[in-house]
Length: 116
Image (cartoon, rainbow, N blue to C red):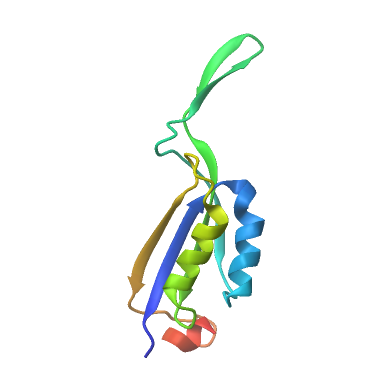
C-alpha cells in the first residue's frame, strides 16, 4: 500500500484559483475547499466605517485539503509555496499529516482505491 498523506493549505483567498490550477497541473484531481477566518502574525487590523473605528481580528482565508498517495508530497508543497509566496505576512501555512485509512462510503473501497 502507498503511503497516504493529508496536506492542508491555508492562504489568502485571492490566490486560490492560481493554486488550484497549479495543483491540477501536477496531478492533484481532488480537494476540499473551505472559507475560513483566522489570524497569525497579522493579528488583524483596524478600520474606520462612518467615523467609527473598529477592529477586524479575524482575516478571511481559504483552506484547501487533499489526501495524496500518487503525487509526491514534496511536489505539492513546492508547487504551493511557489504560487503562494509573496514575502508578505499572511502568505499562509501548510500542514502535513499521515493518513492511516481512507474509506469510500459509496463503494466500500479503501485506501488508495478510495482516493482514485
